[in-house]
Length: 303
Image 1 (cartoon, rainbow, N blue to C red):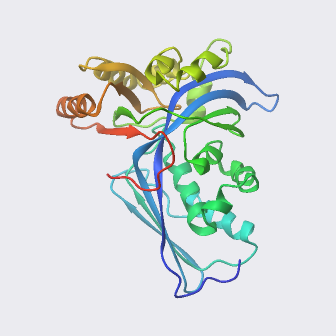
Image 2 (cartoon, rainbow, N blue to C red; image 1 turned 90 degrees about the vertical axis):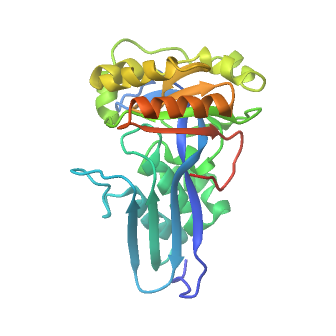
């Protein structure tokens, strides 16, 4: 890729929250990586990324709505968005110049893929949606994290292995949910270390077919194999699960990813919005959002 045109148009991309509908831990490789079988969808809320080509060199501007002291999101090469920008330059085969801006709306250590979704949005913004979505880019992006390939796909999917095997799925309609982050994050490696017991079964074919006509029924029969470990490490997760389950209309309450966000599934938007208001009033220090999980790709959303 040649040096960016100083008059190039700003390219904006959404970085939606990634939600695990299910997470089964089914094995472990000899190198220590766990083998997973997951169902993933994306919410109508998340971070935003913009890439303004031009100027000399690259600059990262981070706009964060959270006060994350004493551990702020880094604006250095430790940031996944910055690493994705470097990867985009290597894939493009030339020097990049421009300003990368990341607008953070999602909590950290929350199990909803904030950093990975940011990185995927950077690759889409810099390389273009088509090139970012090809298999070669996804394979190289896996080095940045297991969630990168599915975040590049940005649509409901079954994800297997270490995040490298992706099968697109269809949901029949948007799913009304409430996301609850109980004010503290969790370390993914720590949650995996705290997990006890053997390995579980894979997601059955009946659940995959059930998603097409009764998604809540299909999801209800699945699980998150990291939920118990997360509750032991951070009891606030268990408190959040109970708070969500106690709300009228809640069909399922389950943790996303390695935590600490809890997802409540409701029959419709009205029930989800009422539950979100009630939970936020009872727990003003928590981050609570009513939103929907998208049945397919859509590049924009509302906060």
